[in-house]
Image (tube, rainbow, N blue to C red; front, side, top):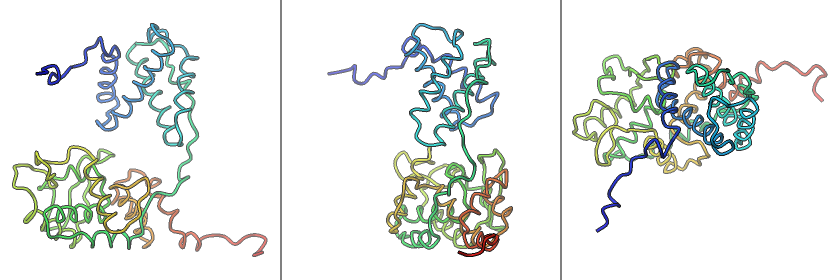
Length: 318
C-alpha cells in the first residue's frame, strides 16, 4: 500500500557534507587519543555543533579558511547556551580537541586550539549528590524477591551500593568474573582503563547467587545481568540500569533530585565510608580513582570530622 514507509533511507554524503571529516575525527579520537566509545560520542557531538555553526554563519567557506576571530565567535555562542560550569568546560574542551585534530590532520595550517579560552572550573567547588545510607538500605529492603525482576533488581542495587562500581562496569561483568571462593568481583573496562577487584559482601553474594539460580534467563550469554525485555540479552546502554535504580529508590520512598542513577549509589557509598573514618586511600582503591584528589571530594561531606580539625577563631567566640 505504501512501500516508501518501509524503506529505511540511508543518509548519503550529499545529505551530510561533514560526514567524511567527522569520520576521520572519530578515528583520530579512537586511535590517537584512545577515547572509549561513550567519550567519543560527546566530543564528536561538540565537533559537529562547531561545524554546524561555521556553515550557518559562514556558508561556502572551507574549513582551511577558518580564522581565529571566527573560532572565538563560535566559542562565545556555545558558552551562551551553557548554564553550568561543567557544560561550559565541556563545550570549550570539545572545540579545542576538534581544532587540534584539524591541525594534526593537516586540514588547517594553524593550531587554533591555543586561542580557545579556558573556562573557570574550581575543583571540589560542589558537594556530590548523595543519599543517606538509611534511605539506601530501606530502598533495597523494600524490593520484593518474589519475581525474577525483583530478584535481579535487588542484586543490581546491592552490588552497586556495596562496591561503588559504575554503570558501565556493572553491565560488563561476566559470570566468570565472580570468584565465589574468595568473595571478589573482577571489574573490567573501568573508566581509567585499569581492571580492578572489588570485595563481594556476604549479603550481596547471596543475592547474586539467588539471581543466577532462580531468576536469570536461560540464554547463552556470558554476561551476569540480562534484560527481561525481548530480545533477552545484556544491557546495551546505561539507561536501563539507571531506570532500575530510579524505580527502586522511588518505590522505597526516596525523594530523588535531578541526578539519580548508579552514580548516586556510588557517591552515597563513598560518603558512608568516609563518614566511618575509613582511610581515604582505601576508598580511592575501592572506587578505582587514579588520583586520591578525586576521592577528596567526599571528605567535604564529613562535617563532624572537619569540625574536629577546624582552628579556633583568632578573635575568640563572639
